[in-house]
Length: 511
Image 1 (cartoon, helix red, strand yellow):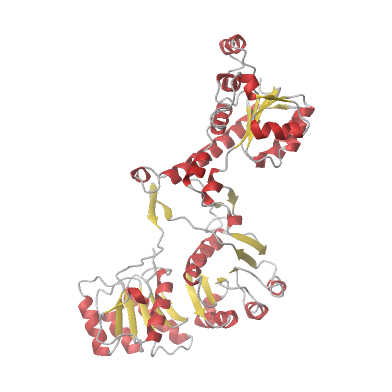
Image 2 (cartoon, rainbow, N blue to C red):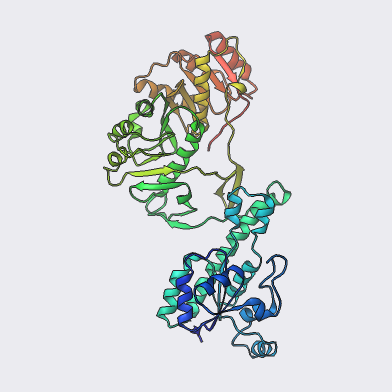
């Protein structure tokens, strides 16, 4: 039959919160309860009559609780098929009572890893019995209901109340699929932890991210979209509409860029389609925003803004004059929030500290490509002067600033800057000359004098043409990775134009 009553349940949970209402429903329907350890004590404190698993099995918990439920009377009670006469006869022969419901909340392996715990403590949080119970119950969903998450307690309690303590096959199949999603994610996290730095890591790619958040649509309205991951771990959304697919892509780019300025003086970046159209540092956050906006106020319209300091009232007043989609900040002053919340759909995100994955993945063709995240940035210690004149201190600071922005801009890219302010950038061009010309044109369009400015390139110059064009525009110093067989031609052009050039030896393509 599709509908099956629950007469006996096994409960073994790490976290006890939210469990009491479900237990109350089970008690109301006269369900026999089996349990172990802390869960048993919790149930008894709730007034429930509980049979200890060791009384069922006739075998005590051993090895400090590592072995509690791994016994034929437990797994036989879950796995025997109620429609199979042979299984029923064996169950009766060996005194194995049926278990119709399994409730498991696994050891918090993922949370323990995230806490920075010692390896011994992490290993102890690898659940063995719980995983096995979930898999067994999910496999036998024809007869058994499985609960694999605290998030399911309320819904199952309501289901059992509505159906008078019984479940249908479609109910059990639904929760079985959810259980395998839980065990799959759990095992993927363990694999990721244990395989770090081993040859095994390169033999297979296993990814798991949860929960799933449906988006209004993908990149375009005709494309469906979903975000997999825990946004609440990174942001508190203080105001505004739901983040869209494109919002999330831009927010990701903004967070990555501002990480370069995490420990600096007040900084602000404005991004559009993942590229910075304004970046600045200043003595105050208000001034940093005003300077960033002046880089390209046209592109800033409808953009994503990120800052590295608390948004105060003065900055909020300036920000409120611009239409933008998203503002990201580490905190907001109490008198700044009402100003920024005056626009209904404006998204305000309070960013929390979080460690990002060391790997990046992307679907490609009929597979997936993976790479290390680009966590390298170059500063003065990495600059190797190759021209007759060296950059001044101010130019060196500007070169470092420009290089950080260049790293996070779509290739081919050229960034023009002064210390603490982006002047213009050319991005996503099919040639570096086009990128440079685009940057020069934009800088001039917004009234910037490029004399004395610096230039950063994400990759080497194959010919001296970029140096010659930059020199004619007034650029006085250049940072680039080097590595071209014609580096000497670009260096010679710099010397002839009285420009300084430093090489980093590190390319930062961003496709």
